[in-house]
Length: 281
Image 1 (tube, rainbow, N blue to C red):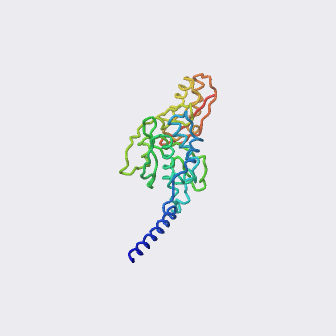
Image 2: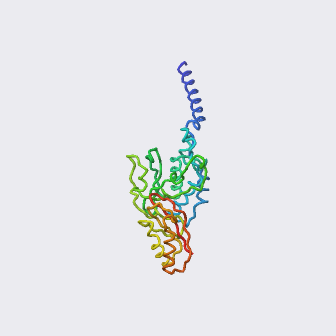
Image 3: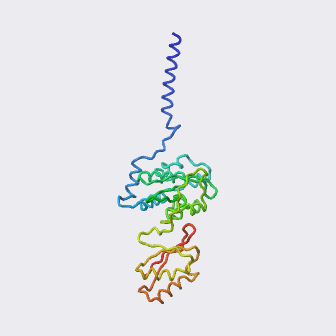
């Protein structure tokens, strides 16, 4: 009889323990999955069925960078919440750190059927996470976090600092300031198809050995019928101070092209190169 009573008490206690654990599991093991409706909405608003894989990757890269605030305050205070490391934090709360950016990017790539993996290691001496993505059977490095730079805490939340320094680049380019973990798988990202590509449809680009080659290169481009072109070069020079602006004007006049005026964008940095887009009228 006593054995039955002990067994009965054991069963009752087990039931209550199970119920308690079941009710508390959300607190013990929080659900960090992203709501399917939110993922579908992001895809619907940013992706078209006629897009190429490159265009889809570009659209998602831009969406994550422009819609997410890097949690610099919690980082500086060493109080980063677990949610910041997840796709849920980035896609639902619009805030996160590098792991959250990379998790969000992979989640959306998986949804689009584009192969993508998360890379871990260090960047500028700090633990970091980024991605590799496969476009048309070629692997590329990509870091959405580093394309969302913050100059200081006051810039937090601004969306005008989108850049492409770490967008579809090679291993050599990425590993200038990124170091993968020793046990990381290598994806042989050595293709340069998009590494220096101006992200404006229809604008061609050329990589020059130095900035002083621009005038003659521009004439060749103009003669081929193109009115806008992006030049990449290793020199960080202002067009006015370096005299390049005058050299371009002289070249256009000397070759008697049908274009009499031109404009150019401020020299900006892209990875280890600088670039400017020149348009002739």
